[in-house]
Amino acid sequence: MRQSRVGVGVIGLGGISSYVHLPGLQLCPQAEIVALCDINPDLLRQRAKEYGVAHTFREYGDLLQHPAVDAVVIATPTIMHAPIALAAIAAGKHVLVEKQLGMTYTETVQMYEAAERAGVRHMTAFTYRFVPAMRYLKHLLGQGAIGLPRHLRIARLQDFPETDLGWRQHHALAGAGEVGDMGAHRIDFCHDLIGPIARVMGLTRTFAPLRAGRDGAFVPADVEDFAVFVAEFVEGVGVEQGTVASFNLSKVAKGRGKGGQGLDELEVYGTEGTLIYHLHRPHEIYVGRPDGTLETVPVPRNFLVYPGSPRDPFAGDPTTTFRWDQDFAFIQAIVEGYSRIPTFYEGMRCQAVIDAVLQAARERRWVDVADVPLVTTPLAATAYTLAAPEERHDDKGNE
Image (cartoon, rainbow, N blue to C red; front, side):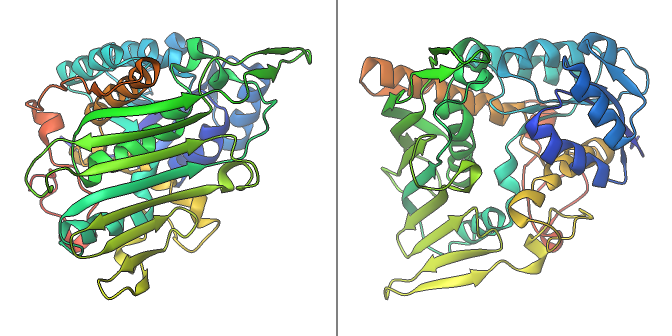
């Protein structure tokens, strides 16, 4: 039986919740934010006032016991993803977890298997799948617009203050640095567009090893702020033999653009042309032709929002507002009963690559990606697509 309205509890009210999850849920007509949880009492009161939420908690276990909570969004430091998600699953809640899904591949396997056994909807927050340009690029690639993909170039270069110190600068809290933070999205790009990654090699650096703490004293940062790596894909249908991707990731690319403004692009080179995506031009892509021309192609209207989303694609900053479709998709998966979303399976598969990249950098060698179990269960086996409305199939997501 379909659920007409979903009561959502949001756990972790920092940056990503403030501009992604809370406004995204507020926009969704079938969602109601019924409870909030954060260890910071001032932030908790502020968000409760902003969104008119009556039930607030300092402990996530108390939120999970609230009868109005049907689903939870987990936007905490990575170290808490698995404990909270497993508790939520045990309580029968649907779960959306920020990337990276867990601290290690082994941890994400536990999360995925628990969610599948419980039969709850589960989602990994691979937000950039919802960029209109990325959705359209995937469509064109699937239509054979550039033939078979040969190689990809992925770059995310940002300029963040080298004195900043937060949980992301501590391995014990984050599990990884740039490879797990921005790299997770780009690894997922490749999985979504091409297929599984078989092996990787790469290098990491911590160019800013000392960061200023709250008292002004400098303390060590023990995660990478720069990474380069190469990935080789599993051979399969539609993938030309030897398909590879190169990644360039940095939080210390001086002069490249402050914070989230830096360089964010993906290029796919095929046997018959090129497709290029830029995050900061989310409503267009570039198509390279064999004759050497590079054409700017507007994203068609029916790809500008996730199917059914009430979001106006032309309102606000389009490099931010596309993210709201992610939470809408999560709610729709619960209400409509399909899994047309990136699940914990995708988060688990991504984590296998993250772990392999970090191992390859430590050991200076090629590392095979852990064999991720084949999808055999009904929920995760449901096809994932972000097709335009007229391309959708039945309401269960079966193709």
